[in-house]
Every structure is written in C-alpha cells, then in structure tokens.
Image (cartoon, rainbow, N blue to C red; front, side, top):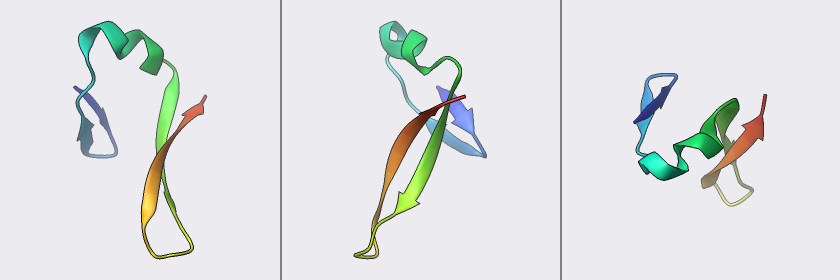
Length: 41
C-alpha cells in the first residue's frame, strides 16, 4: 500500500516499481467530478 496525504492506494507488488518517484494528484473536472492523475517528481 502506498500512502499520500493520508489516503491509501493499493498497488500490486509487481507494479509498485512504476510508482517510485511519482505524485498522485486529484483533478476536478468541469462536470463536478474528478479523476486521479500520476505526475513525475
């Protein structure tokens, strides 16, 4: 599990290498919803 700003994300162990040195951000959409996006840091 990866935790960022108090929110936990479940990541498959073999895919965890792809989440090293990234930031997960939540972006609100025009329709009031939102989505998560992965940013390189």
